[in-house]
Length: 121
Image (cartoon, rainbow, N blue to C red; front, side, top):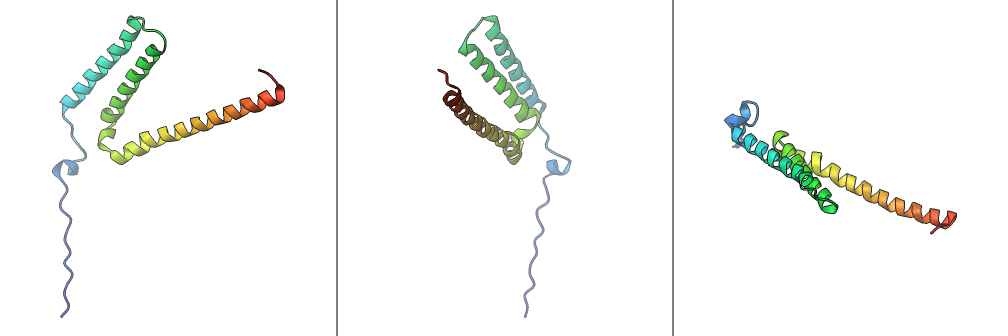
């Protein structure tokens, strides 16, 4: 007697996914908008209070990166796409850092050879 193989059908997809995508509550977008407003106000406050030097640029960069992160994560829906996040954000950033490291290394070598061959301090 031969036994017939039992084939199981995959479970039906969830209703939210079969209707064409994910649905997020409007409250999430309003909270993100409020955070963007607060971060922008903090960025303007750095200029308003005349913060100078390295602290000024550090604060401006931190606020800028925080705003960009919120926009990319929520409005571009990267927070729900793990593999896409790696390919679109982390991989290019890592490659950029590698290339910057290569340029720094090359600049040190170029400076050394110019000092040796052309003289100088």
